[in-house]
Length: 341
Image (cartoon, rainbow, N blue to C red; front, side, top):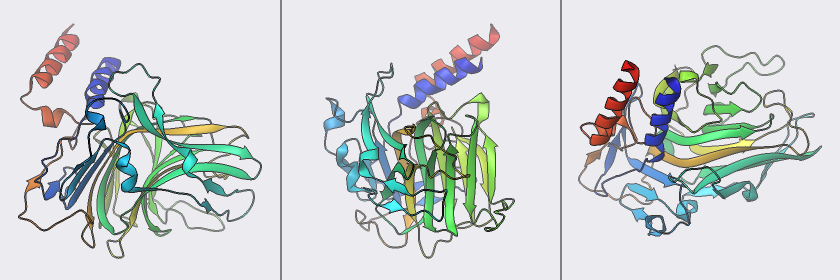
């Protein structure tokens, strides 16, 4: 039964497309941190380079931007400098653009032929490479970040989706390859008391079990909603955690980051030399507010829109946006028959 449900939801998720009216000037989201957002972005890595619509020019409206080609780097910076080590045995993380790639899929799927991959590898005793992309707008005051992704590879790496201003203004989704494949770490910084004992601060950091016996090695939608008084975390539309402790402030504003890294630390784990792990991403969806106007924004009469992929219980684009559609009817009929028999 569970496998059947997961299979059908996966079909719906991998057919996701973000359909946004180019006349929209504001966007809304549901959930505990429901908000009105100034700007919308959708970056689709599923079929980059394939003939057809995915080679058409990028849709570029006043406040909504939908990218289905390699121009996504117009909005994202590929990190090309290391993060220093605080002290041995922790080693520096050498973030390099070569660890960020469009990967040709070998999966048996007609829905995607490519995806974005961030990877981390232990090169030698003193070198751990990683991949990170940084959203170029560093004036974000609130955001809803959705990433349809999977993580796989050897222990000793961390996949991160987070907002960041500094080490005390940060909200994180972290998936550690050393952990059980159904555990995800959520935190707002500071998450511990610091040296010398590094005691976790209750409410600021938690480990949570993924819903419905799912694993992060499979494709799932990971979501972080950050507003100035709350952080809320989701998997596949299921709220997994929320906290009002150490929530990042709106002023000064933050940036948005997605990465895959390791450092030979007790926090991330030790990766053996020659080991590697991957963070595969089919698409990224952002709704955000900014302290100053986005470079692509212009003042107009407001038109409020809800993205198709924003739903209360679903994956990708989903059930909420398919109300009254034949697909939802068929889905419900098949599921009902399966349960009955």
